[in-house]
Image (cartoon, rainbow, N blue to C red):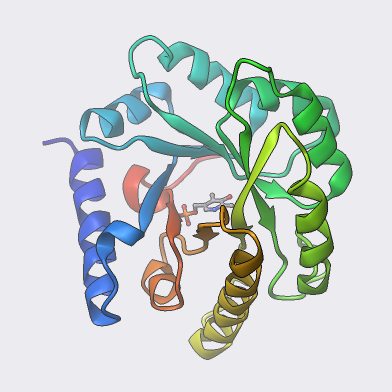
Length: 230
Ligand SMILES: *Cc1c(COP(=O)(O)O)cnc(C)c1O
């Protein structure tokens, strides 16, 4: 067995163990394999082990992989999880299944307008800045309701949930407070918008805490593909 396959199995085991502790079903927590900076052959290896959802941060790199793997790996769902500039929105609307990093109306409108009519609506998560760090992208929690209302009316998009990148901190109490705030906000929004079923939080180092706080999709790179060289 190659290492990617072993690592994937370990991550599934971690998710299952974390779910068991809080009496959640592991089936309610999806795994997004974050393949940014990694070659298409790594994606293929994970695909061969059954992985179907992949996350990318850089649009051009992702589009190259998407076209390279289109024929060989049918059924992959590609998620953009990195910042999106408006001049790249057409490429994204034409290539991805999900964009998790939407934090302003203008980009949402472009994605909706540019989504090809023969494709399903693009799944969207609103990115929320839960730590209040100034240099971080994402909406303030208080802005989520208004953008959700606007995005839910765009015909080329389907509003599916919320995403956050928490503060890089060793203080797990602090982290937990932030993750639980996002969970509360998510629950309020999901009451209003029944198609909102995705709370995207948790990465290689904090996925257990994220699962305990209600995450439905963890985004894991390093623990599957190894560390990244930029
Ligand atoms: C890179 C990245 C991840 C994966 O992080 P790891 O620590 O490698 O698991 C998850 N989410 C986002 C938004 C990322 O940019």
